[in-house]
Amino acid sequence: MRNDVPAAQAHTRELGPAFDLLAAYDPAGGFFMERDGRGIGASGPGILVPVAPGERQVARAVDALADAFAAVAADDGVAPVAVGAFPFEARREAAMVIPRRSVVRAEDGATREIVLGDTDRAARDRAAPPANTDGRLADRPVPFAPFESIQIRYLPSPDEYGERVRVAVARIGAGELRKVVLARTAEVEAGRGIDPRSLLHRLRSVDPAAYAFAVPAGPTPDHDQLVGASPELLVSRRGREVRANPLAGSAPRAGAPDDDRANAERLMSDAKNLEEHVIVVEAVAAVLARVCDELTWDRAPVLLETANVWHLSTRFRGVLREPPPSALELVASLHPTPAVCGDPTRVARATIRELEPFDRGCYAGPVGWVDADGDGEWAIALRCAALHDERATLYAGAGIVAGSRPADEVDETDRKFRAFLDALRWG
Image 1: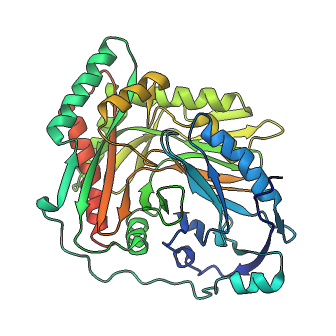
Image 2: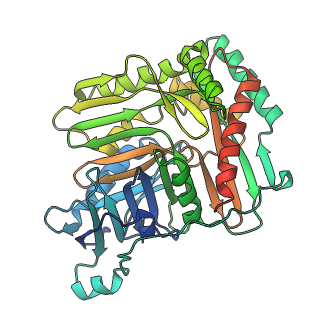
Image 3: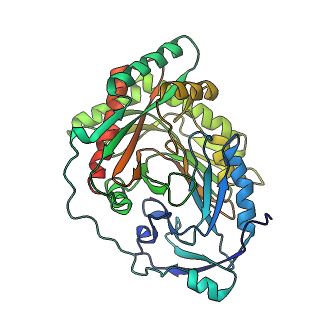
């Protein structure tokens, strides 16, 4: 055990099914992740586990967390939970946190509060935050006014982004790579503070099947908050069961039902989107096959619908070999998938560094949780914004393959921006 990890005690109690996980989330360094009412809300950095930048960052976090979990004495049947996010590229420090207080709702609906404190009971009682046993939050009654164009600055601009898509398509045509994902940002000067909890409330109301999440966007709890609603599961583990749900290839939703269905049907037969999707499925299947005794997945992509976009989706389900890798070890093997980077990975990463005029930070990186037993759930940080005082930096990307057209990719990223800008009015 590392000498610099403090000893701690984890105590637990059961909470009722009406508890709102968002009530347990503290924007001042807390963590939130929820899908369909299941997930975790947390507050207070009980044990901070920094992970230095550099190669194998996520894999090194596995070892560091083992030391941190070993320092926690837990009630019988309690597996302490660590939460966090990793940058898309390991060029900046990351951190995992075992929260001071977390409320976890499992797949079966059981809701448990875990409070971490000093091994001295009196000190623990002083440190534990008061529990919100009601656990209900009210939504904002009306949104703020729409943002004016003067409040939004795009980097790169639509024209510049289209030119970068042309460059990428030319390189793909020359055989340098098969796919690359290029992103843009939209910086919004809101002229007011943005409340992460109100924004999360709106995001999960619009799409409860997405992973609504909030996490410090850097290695310290006082860093900017990254808030979003990702449709994409990177990987989850429950015992020996593993699941993944990569997405690649998309089409816009339409207001008229007939037009909406037509868009979905075109997506299912579109060669460009199908090629983009196959590249991702091949990569995920290759990784999971190495660690599974059994592995199944959809032999043809299925449709996944969000409020604004149709996605091509493939659902993986497997049985891990003994001894099963932890959820975080699986993240280390999978990230980055071609869904957020490209193929081959090394060339795609170099292309992204060259063509994207900003640092992605934790955008398109893994965000999630892992417990001391190795179970956990990790999404990809998509459809999100980094919040800093009165400013929000939104991110949106598109997968570029041989058949990509610059105007279509500009339109795809614009649609993703518009959806989040509307949600931001409620924050």
